[in-house]
Image (cartoon, rainbow, N blue to C red):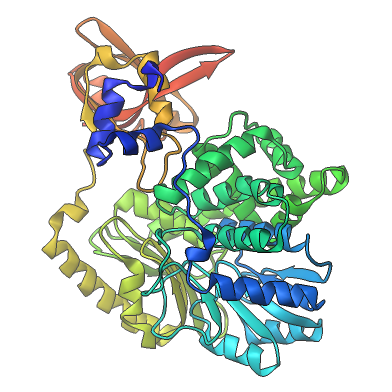
Length: 544
């Protein structure tokens, strides 16, 4: 391995993350990791593959049924890529967030049956849809459920693939929905003897969905995303390449997915219909007109999303006292497509779990939630499953439908339960001042910033390392943006100067910035490229 990536600080960071053996270090730092597993180790994979291939050979009409987020969108496209090599009698469906809602619905099943669908394969949904699966089967349809969400008390009575099953034999349980779809596609490709290129060609999709769904970027997920980022940077999928060009993305990293690609793909399902994103990803490279049209649609959706998100955030924030253990609000009139994003932003601001519910107009409320480390939101809601018409999700995010009366019942129950969680572990409430290593100003070099890049892709369970610089003098602050929200400055100690930038929170730290007194800085060390010139900079997260 090259000496330049054997940086002492990088090795110390790996040690802090439990990566100490030579084998684990090699795997973690390798540009070509090998931690991936045989898809047929997954429970029910052989049965699912046999059924799907038999149905394709028989000419049955097959529908891939997904979810309206990036994980669901990419899952549909991944499975479509391999099944389209086996049959022309193929369709896909993603429910409308507004008229159908998440998951399987009997009314939609009726429409699919009327369209001649014989087999439904769910991706990123279905694991709690027992009644809907039974209904589809009562109509003579076959069902395969693939999902990655937490299981209910009883599984659907059909072939079910979910690595979270209790008796699961697959070595890795934390795949995203698109990761599970990818393993199914891999199994189909192998059993049908298809060219391996159909699987390799989908790595850009599985990387995008995995990063967007905020699953742990460890083990097989890390392998998938590393290879997927390479594929993204090849720009072989013309629809994604056109989107990247339109939003000025160049070298694609996990951050490019989180803050560029994913919001635009998600915006389709939030503002209009997720099918708009599917049509972009499935568009053949020669169909320039469709690609251009779909990119314009996604950008327009995302622009509208940001506008409505700011309004929802402002209206919700006005209702918060700051004394809540869990922020659980009814805020009518906000666009349900952006409630989850507003909840996430409020969670970051108040460091509390957040649930926002809005009126659907028929006596029911639709709700969405986002949680902090240490509070399993799905587990909390699942403990009151009898109150919900529908509920699903995982520990960090959830969605539900509930009556107005039951929501009023739920609020004080959650408030008390979360308060007890804090009493048992008060450290949950103090998630400021957290960093990986303390280093000196002289350690902040371009060489360090370049060495840290080998730790990518960053994301859940593999966060970008944060460093502490102590007793730094702030020099020459230069404010930027509306209301001087951002600031650039130099931080100096013992003759070593570090270029710094603080985004969004300049006014929150104005007193420390202007005091002239030494401060402690917590932030990430990154490469700043401008006009082909590289320099190191610290992205400051906190001034302590």
